[in-house]
Structure formats: C-alpha cells, structure tokens
Length: 226
Image (cartoon, rainbow, N blue to C red; front, side, top):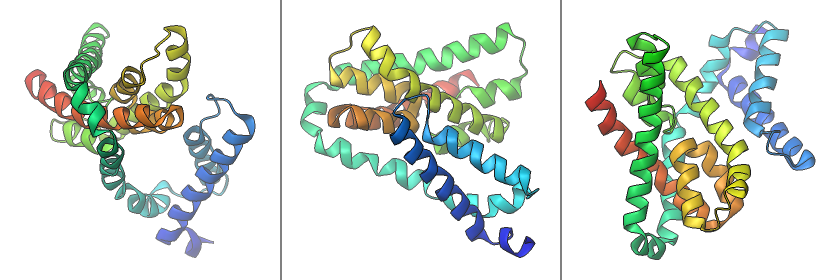
C-alpha cells in the first residue's frame, strides 16, 4: 500500500478524481453551496484520514499541481484579450474599482487583526487573502508570514466569493457585467473567476483582469503597510 501513495502520481490522481467528483455533484445538485473545491478538499482529507496516509506523501503529487497555478492564472489573459475593446472603453472605472477593492480588502484585514490583537506573523499571513495564491504566497513568505495560513485564507475567501457573489449581484441588482466581473475578481480571485465565467463572457474577462490589477495593487499596499 505504501508503494502506491509514495508515488507522485497518487497525489495528482486523487486530486483530479476528487475534483471531478465535486464537479459532477455540483452539476447534479445545481447549488452554489455545493462547491467542487469544497467537495474535493473533504474527499481528499477523508481518504488521507481513513487510510492513514501522511500528508507529506500526498503533497509530493500536490506540488506538481501547484506548479500549474501561475500558468493557469496567466491563461486568464486570453479572456481579457478577447474583450480588449471593453477594457479600452472602461479603463478608468476598471482601475478605480480594482483600487477600491484591494484597499478595502487589505485595510479591513489589517484593522481587524489589530482589533483582535493578532501578532505580526498572522497579520502578514492574512493580508493578501483576496489575491490569487502565487501572488499571496510571494507577499506573505518574504515578510515572515505563515504560508499554510495564507493558502487557507486565500482558498476560503475564493470559495466564499464564488458561493455568495451570485446572490449579492441579485440583491444589489448589479446589471452591468463589467462591474459584476470586477467585483468578483477583486474579492475572490481565481476561484471566484470560475464562477464569473459561468455568469458570462464579459464577467469572466473582467474578473480575470481584476486578478492581475488587484494583485499588483495589493503588493504595493502591502509593501507600504509592512
């Protein structure tokens, strides 16, 4: 049995199968709460616990998947390119919206961490929660943050954004696809963008654009704060 899970292919296969099961269940149930990523996390954790497989063994394959995070994020530029005319038309609202979203995210986390008396390490770990994982880790790690905490914060933020954003769009009657896409991308990065793509082509493109712009702004703001 140990020969099986020490192979890097085990972690890759388990992750793919778990996420595939999550996607199928989500399509069948058709509810945002049944998020494929949540289902995949639960299934992987259950397999590791039941069969007493060390996380380190699973993560050998997990690291291979992690290598594709940055390229996958960069591929969102294709959707942005297809909507270049929209970007040229709304460049000022796009920049203003991304700036407002990034400042609200970083500022609220910083204030809450101070109010609850969290130490510097946890504060640094949580600050980049609303940007995609490769950028968040590059902010947290050099500044002395705890990378696993940063990754968990990013995942939770993305999942919550993908679940709640459709409801918020309806509640606040956001009819402009550009505004909806920017809001989703600014607060819930790549995971939220997957939901924005489902809402529409423009929403997906603007959400992907927001990931890059908000990432740059968050890096700059974090440098000032830290």
